[in-house]
Every structure is written in C-alpha cells, then in structure tokens.
Amino acid sequence: MTLFPVVMPVIEVEHKPCGKEKVDYLSRIAREALKLSAEKSGVTLGKLLKDERGAPCPVNGNYWAISHKPEYVVAVVSRDKVGIDIEEIKPRPESLFARVASDEEWEIKEKSRDIFFRYWTAKEAILKVIGIGISGLKTCRIISVPDENHIALDYNGQFFLVEQLRYKNHIVSILKGGNQIEWIILEDFKP
Image 1: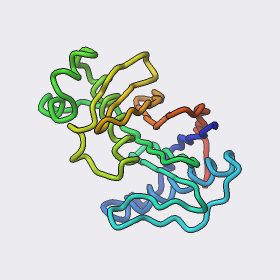
Image 2: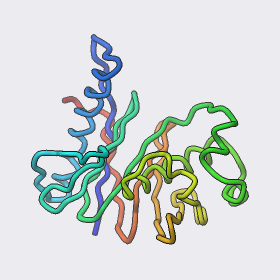
Image 3: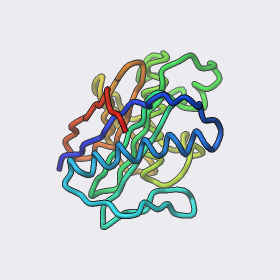
Image 4: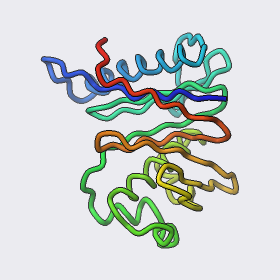
C-alpha cells in the first residue's frame, strides 16, 4: 500500500492567533492537508473525532494522523494505524537529550541536534500509534538507524519502522510499516 503524507505551509494571517485560537487555526490547516492525503488515497473521510485520550478515531475503517508547527502542518490517511510528527530543528537544552533517549540509544548515533530531532519525531510518531503521550518516550527505544531516512524502533517488543523527511529545517516522521511512502509537499497552498 502507498501512503501519501502531505506537508503544507501555514499561511500567515493578519491577526496572529495565540493560545487555543492558534491551535485551532493550525488544526484547521492540518485537516486541509488531511483532505488532500485522503483524496490521493482514494478515501472518503467523514467527521473526524478523537477518543477520550485525544487520539484520532478511525473513520470508515481508515486511520488518520496530523501534526503541526507554526510554519508547517503534516497529515496522512491510512488503512492501518498511523502516526506522524513534525518538528523544527532548533536549539534545545542538553538536558532534553537524556529525556528523549538513553545512553545506549545515543551510542547508535552520535549526539547532534539533527539526531535529537530524528529520535524525537520517530518516537512521537510511534507513541501516537500506540495511543500514549510523551510519557512513553523511554519505553519506545531506538533499535537502529539504517540510513538517513529511516529509524527502527521497539515498543514493548513490537517492531516499528519510521520513514523521515527533512524539509526546510524541519524533520517529519511517519510510521512506514510495510507501506511505500509518497511525500506530497505543497509549498504554495492557498486555502
């Protein structure tokens, strides 16, 4: 099966929203990206609901995932459970490195800002599939980094393969599984 994750820019608005208004605005844009992923996948989505933990509920047997940052949103539809995450690569305190990965995981790849965000987004994508938040960062373990676009992880004995995309100082991670990934990047989208 082919997944079509969509990367879409956040269009600047005159009134800069903040707080809940900003999250709602970013969520609306992410849902536009989700519509495009669904269209490309030949899927019709209905009402998008979340469960009591805030995890997306399947629609017509299809799973969906979104993530957003101030500059970009990402979204994907899949017949299987799916997770996606995006982060901007920017300075972070060294103390966060230990919260994201163990010493053994840091031995797989040398500590760097790029690897920090690759680990972070890969784990976040998997934790979204599992249905738990960042409290599971330590339980989700990096097994290997086979190349510049993939990371293999383990969560309680379950194997996961994540594909990654670097785009304009951001890293996007998606649960790949046995699927092909065809990235859709819309730099000039206008709502």
